[in-house]
Image (cartoon, rainbow, N blue to C red; front, top):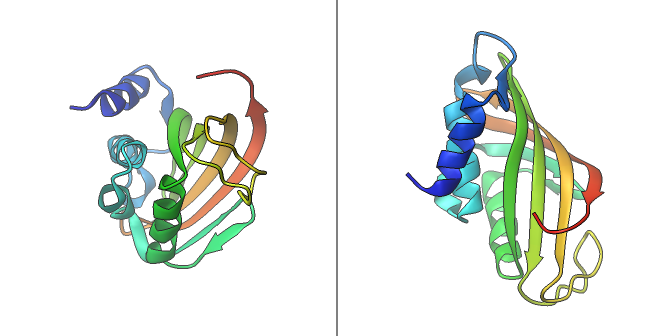
Amino acid sequence: MDRRRLAALTLLAAGGLGVGTANASAGVGPADFADYIAAFNRHDFEGFSRFYDDHVLFEGRGRRFETRQQVVDFYRMAAERLRESIVVRRAYFGQDGLAAELETTLAATRDWPDFFGGPLKAGDVRRSLNFVFYAVRDARFIHIRSANFKELAGQP
């Protein structure tokens, strides 16, 4: 088991991934979400995109994608410019979706002057706290809405 999955499951056991109702997100429960985040953090595009419906709607920070392939293409392009990692602070699971408080770290590996969050230079590190809502049907994310709450100072 890789250390990020272990950390996510440890957070789950400690109560950081709360369960809002008895029915865990129409097939995406805490262990599934931990797998999704672990795959995302290791940049396993096939691994994390298996949680997306073919026609997932992704909305966040000025970006809008309407298919799984568009989301994956964006993250492949981003991975050429930065390393992104996510820490789940809290997640709440319901019958038709989940809500999560996510700490995101972006570490630029090369300059990205037209980055949607403002220009990045190689070596820059940005951290933020975000709220993300996932609508789920048949164990797949069908709608993802991400909102930036605040920027965080310092290194993770």
